[in-house]
Amino acid sequence: MEQVIDIQIAAVKKACNGDAKAQAWLYEQYSKAMFNICTRMTGNISDAEDLLQDCFVIAFSNLHQLKVAAQFGGWLKRIVVNECIRFSKKNIRWEEWDSNEQGNLVNEEVEWWKTIDFKIIHTSIKQLPDGCRQVFNLYVFEDYSHKQIAESMGISESTSKSQYQRARLLLKQRIYKQVQIHG
Image 1 (tube, rainbow, N blue to C red):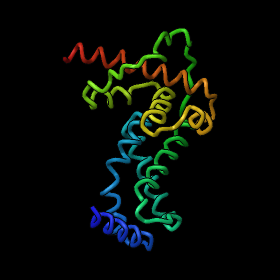
Image 2 (cartoon, rainbow, N blue to C red):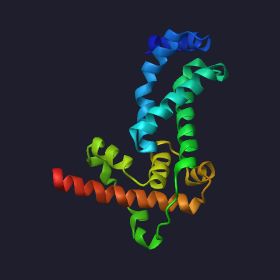
Image 3 (tube, one colour):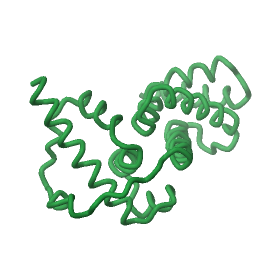
Image 4 (cartoon, rainbow, N blue to C red):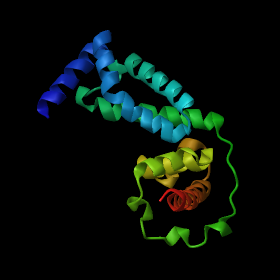
């Protein structure tokens, strides 16, 4: 493990000096994970690919700002999430959702989704309406609070909460339907 960290630190330092091979190595190491974030948050491959490229350009252009080379992965992830948020703020139209439709979903304790194949969940997340998908991803995968989501997306905290609840309900309905059809 320590050898991998040493290689990464060396690659980050070389990439900071414009070394194209080091940048290519870092891209190879991180692009798949960052692409998955972009895909989950944008909902489509085309936008995800564009965002991924933009994020690496931003990262390599600002690599000199990274204080600790070993923290490259976390630093890059923050860039990716922030760029996805920026992209979404320009492209999402927030849909109102009647809070009466929430029912008892807020109090649901059973984490039913842990028993389902993640490929089905991932596909279903990408198909959520834009606002729901953004809030769900930020809350579940990026550990943002509803307050942080509201501030970063320029929405109210209650909108964040209702979009999250709507996302959960839609995911549950869609995934149950898929499981019933495909087994």
